[in-house]
Length: 179
Image 1 (cartoon, rainbow, N blue to C red):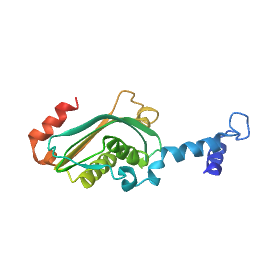
Image 2: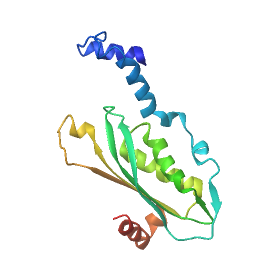
Image 3: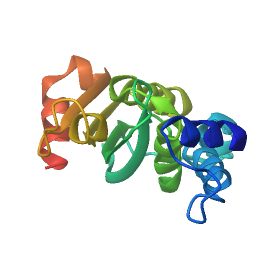
Image 4: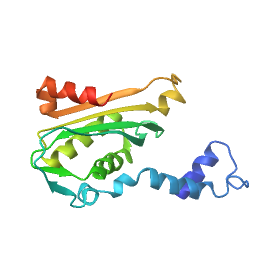
C-alpha cells in the first residue's frame, strides 16, 4: 500500500521525495489499515462470548455511539452517531459489544444504508431479540468537501426488525427515547 500511495502523490504532481512528504506514503498506508480494520474482525471475536442470561424483556438502547467510516464511492469519511435498541428474549449482550459491532462494520468501505442494516441484522442474530432498531445520522465528506459542497446536510438511515417494524408503539417509544 505504501508504494501505491507514493504513486498517487506523484500522480497529483507532488514530489514524494520533498521533506514534508518523504514519510507520507508509509503514514498513509498505516492510517488506511487503521481506518479499514473492520475487514480483519468478525462477529464472534467482537462479541467474545459476552451474552448473559436475563429476564428483562424491556427495551435496551445504546445511543450516541460515535462512528467513523469511509464511503465506498469516494473513499472519503463520513462521521456520525448510531442509536441501537433491542428487546431481549432471555439474553442480553454486553454493553460495549454493541459499540464494537458498530465499529467493526463502520471500519470498512461502506454506504450508510448498508451499515445500518448490517448492525441491525448482527444484533438480531447475536441476541435473538424480539426486535432491533438502528438509526444512524452522519455527515458525509463526499458531500461537504466536493460535489455539491453542502456543509450542513446530514443523512439519517434506519433499520427496524421484528417488533420495531411490526409494532408502531414500540417504534415510537424507541424514537422518543433517542431524542
